[in-house]
Length: 312
Image (cartoon, rainbow, N blue to C red; front, side, top):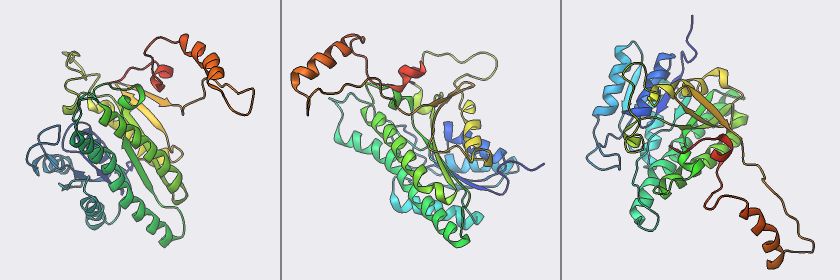
């Protein structure tokens, strides 16, 4: 019996630890050859010397289980190195079929205290890192499509966050990057559909190095799988990377602890029309002030309100 990803090649960024590691192992278990990418810096804020160890250890783990894997330790926030990552997949395995963007860092601070470097660093690794790899993978699939004269196989799975959905007061850089990733995903989905490529984004909730503070108060169970284990997220990534998900495109899916929730595109909550050519201040005051007076003070626009979710 063949495996769903047999004969395919996947790249997983940030795959040396946490979610990326679990996703790389799952894709390998489903039959894919995996390029395990991780820059290997020890600090979750992107600090410390880069190391080859995290990527190499996961690649070795995949090979020990009978799979095929290659370690890559480039920085995906660097445009050239992202291109080299895609080239490493095609050079080693002869093709690229799946791209899972997961790499990221945190530099949390309130917006009034955040430095320019703290903003730029998080946007660079998360949002630019997603763009860099997507650019080179998309170009590869477009050329393959031209060569064969029709659609090819391509899957992109991007990593957003509920911090984008519900807000995160101490993470303006992270929330903005994760919102930008959703925009990048939907644009990519539209642009690449004609080539046979899909692009989707997930909002995972998991206990990792990135979220150790967030879930510090949630104890791991004495028995059984932790509801916040990354292994709850990995199967969805495997599914989205598979032929079975050919009709899933441009979607945003929240996933954690045995639950998936498909996020609906924003809907108009209320509409008001001016009684003349354009609104006046008084007319807007008469229409909008009573509308917002009915809502709890401090309540913000968030898809989480519809889903009944809270940020992680």
